[in-house]
Length: 322
Image (cartoon, rainbow, N blue to C red; front, side, top):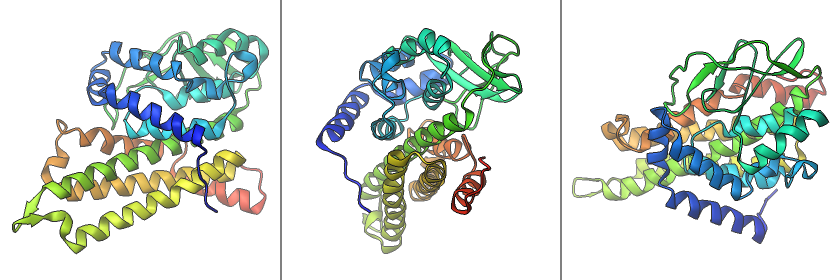
């Protein structure tokens, strides 16, 4: 099946692309990696003003949603520009805060960009807990608002700063919709990964047109063309799976989209690294901002194995969800 965005959705994507291009996101990412959040939070507010976070928040709580297709459109652009911060976790928080009391108090601030949320199971590392103003964690007792965070730790992707959330805190609900929230997190991760893969492909195509060997661009070599074509096919195969899953919001479909998009982005990263050569390994070169993110997203909110198991469960009619 062929999925095409309507004119309004394409205009939304184009406006985000223009805004993020003008924002010089590589410099924002590098500042965020150093723990300097001012430019990143300013960009966060602009993204919220564009309505991105409101797409995950119900209209009853001053949002536009839930609108998963438009959210996927937005997250492709956020991934394409390597925007830092707990983007997926903020979407997940919107899905977790289903009780009317906490929802009325917290969701309008998420939609407006006045708050930044992170979320993680108790005892696990949370993304950007040091900058988040809403920290959600869950255990056998239910969903809690964590009272703080532990030491900030580096991760594979320097822009993804990890902390453990402190135990205790306000009990928000004893029965949070964890499976529902995981589906939203996987959809946003899949869309972000697709955008990362597309950016890696675009940058690599531009590079092989400029780099020469034996007096000709390396992009003219048949072996290089084959690698780029295979990468393009993988990304284009992931695109309809992503938007089809966004329409259905079936956990198995979303898991399939997540594993396909993340594997395609990971393939784009390997191809980009090989065709760039030694310069691709340098942290100073902007390509690294997408290379590390592709690998980190691959394991975020469900490894390839966990997502494949969820797909098989859906095909067999099983009730287990990873």
